[in-house]
Length: 384
Image (cartoon, rainbow, N blue to C red; front, side, top):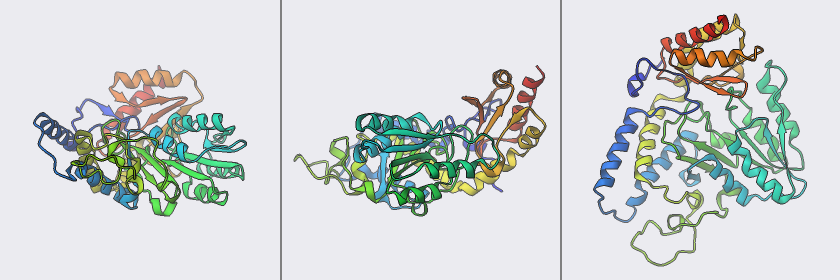
């Protein structure tokens, strides 16, 4: 099993940071790469033809390798909402059509579709969370598939639920959507980097990801991976660098042809040296660790938490119902979670409260003492 990687980060020993699902801490290699980029900005050097895109193309190759696809399918976005807007612009919703999504899907995944439904006369159809945790991953996935029918225009869901890590059967849901030619948009923000995903095997029309969580990138950096039905679509943003021939920065003529493939959808200013250099460094680190090693480590690390939960007033999904790196704690005692947040804060334990769920999200930088501090804080809230 891979060893703890805390040495790759600058986290103080007194901080029990179990909140990667909120925001991943920057590794020291990313900090170093960011400082070097700032130094280059302080004393700019002339860029030759093609050099403007050098770091973005390196990152494009890394993203393609992460999800098992071709670089021509990768576009750079500042946020998941930008990727959803890309799909909305190229997949109009008509009167009577529906957009299917799980209940309490992350807002950035649905707001664009809500607006599209309002314009076109469609409706957002959310699929409720099953009433019990027993076999929840399969039952919720099946309910989503049952909601897909001839009126379905789009299915938009995450690989895992952002609140408690429920693992959706994205492959089966995608196959069901294909029967009705519905567009499939998948948000991988809460799993890519910590859980394996194959774009070729799942074959969604669009995979979206923000990098500042499990890929340890800076804020406002992310990407979209496009399937064939969107690859030749029309960008909604018009700028010089998504046009054919833009690598030749000496040219002065207006260019009316978009770049080939997903590069036409790159956000303007995407080749910003500092965030690209930082994300490149972090991506190399994450890919060197490997998703299997991350899953195995956090599964073993959180075993004492799973054992504690069996005898506590907190409930969480069984490990086979969720991803290894997100554990959502719920309780039938309404005031308990508020007390738990207070007790955890006193012990310098960082987690997130999302709705009725206390979200714990560890990574390779966490140690057994982090989990011990978590359990201590949870128990203190019970006996207060």
